[in-house]
Image 1 (cartoon, rainbow, N blue to C red):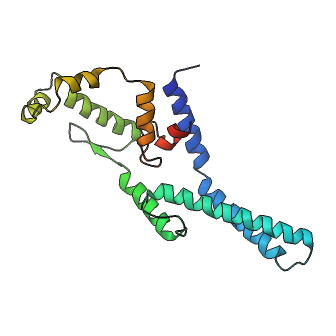
Image 2 (cartoon, helix red, strand yellow):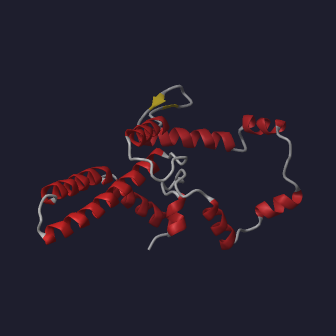
Length: 192
């Protein structure tokens, strides 16, 4: 059966694979709807008139889904309903994706690493070194930090959390904000 994290990992990979072709699917489906509407628009046959109405409804639904797709990718939460699916969404989403990518990192020896496994190793080594007890520079850095947590707050922080507390926190998050390390955003956990 596996544990929850392995199931989430598998689910995230399956969703990423499924979502990778959505943009092409929207483009294809919208073009097909337009073609059917154009072909049948001038006919006076009652069955064709009904088909045109159905295709128009499908067309509007597809446009709305495509707009939601690009709004989510662009992370433009200040936009309001009714804003058109414009080049703006596409430009913001593409720019955001390129800006957030880490293409290479320098390791402790001064060598640049650019393959995914090396990038992960550089990050792990950095944080392992930063937060290890044997590292004197990490401990020295805390000398300048004032103690802000009272004993009662510390007890609350160290106490086990309840399911209700966890649920409350998850539902306070914006559904489309940044995903966690598993690649799933808060909307996934809120819905499922």
